[in-house]
Image (spheres, rainbow, N blue to C red):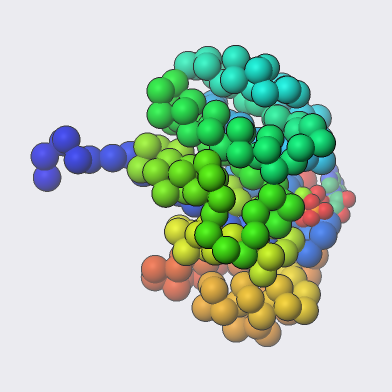
Length: 207
Ligand SMILES: Nc1ncnc2c1ncn2[C@@H]1O[C@H](COP(=O)(O)OP(=O)(O)OP(=O)(O)O)[C@@H](O)[C@H]1O
Ligand SMILES: [Mg+2]
């Protein structure tokens, strides 16, 4: 193939599971060696991790993400959650495209998206970011209430134990038996490749 169309694709990792099951810790472990990463951090957790810089305010986010080299930024939004989320997505897309590939971490998507098509710049990031080398970790406790574009573009599921409607929904989308999810203990997960259906069990480690 000619080099012109070759892209260094990012991955879209969908992370699901009930509260306190280990989602944030697992993703933090997976990205610990990434040089360029930006987290949507509504609960101000990522900004407390070693090596991460807390950023508040849209102007500050834009400035921080213009850096071309090493950058690990946790953006803690203000009261306009949906507006700030859209802005964060736009900045991440732009940074991945012009300043260099990066990893984006989006916490609790059910708070900022709906079950319909991905809104605004989140949709653009999902549809156009991956082929520009942006890897996205999309995290939610409640995927039945979060957007379907994310699920549809997913390249890897990391599924922790869920409850009720969410078990049904995510099991159907990842094509895994509900029983397999119901049997997971806290901190245990299944990693599923939606193309090959390969399933690998895992467990969160604390560092
Ligand atoms: N260093 C540690 N040692 C032992 N347990 C820990 C440590 N750090 C976190 N935990 C526990 O691990 C569990 C998982 O926490 P984590 O924040 O990763 O879950 P989560 O799925 O992201 O939750 P939420 O949906 O509320 O965001 C929690 O019960 C937490 O108290
Ligand atoms: Mg969490």
